[in-house]
Length: 88
Length: 188
Image (cartoon, rainbow over all chains, first blue to last red; front, side, top):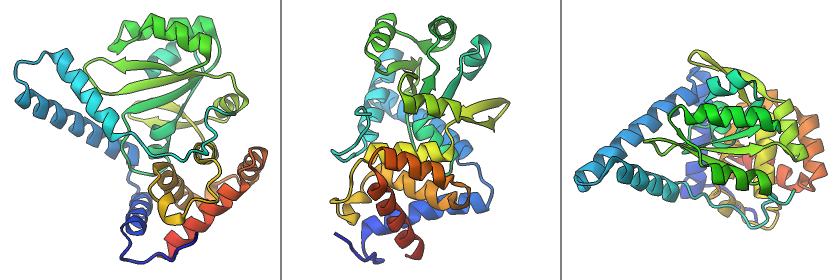
């Protein structure tokens, strides 16, 4: 079913913002990979700090396991049932 | 990791989220999807090399992955970054390997999936989306990946290749649907 995008639809607005970021980075010659690499490292450091504060007695291995579990939750993307991956 | 691949001369191509980021959509990912050539001797050398560095390679998982043609997950020690390794056996995987492009990152040269291959991968991930309402499509990360890469690189896409591959997989309607969506976003 087709819909007309409006400024009041959060999903259309988000998609527009996503595309605009990609286009702006291209026009400003900013490398998205470098930005995301820094952001990723920052995210890992923050996550580690937060978990260390919450679980001061945890071992480094336990902290890493908790970080991996959180990342798994955050990156569980939605995908249609008609996906052909694994069927080709 | 790339240095280990180069050292043992194992051909590879980076696909998935990292390829999406390099081709222009700034988004997060915690894994690096890698397709490598089916050369068991070099693969074994590569995995041995990784074991000497900061990577966790589980022999049992490697064995099962190779036997079943499934992904092999390799964790980076003390990090949440994971490498998902696929040994190229299917036609699409071999084509992705053969059409890899080179890109520079810091002091390294990386082999990366071409724009057309990344877009084609998104079509495969999405499958038949004809009956999915447009608004719902925007909830899929793969759709946002496609829209951003498509609009950012419109003039550099190999349309003959993408159309041919979409037709082979019966995914022309998916491609048209995503192009239509991209046009709407552009006019938004």
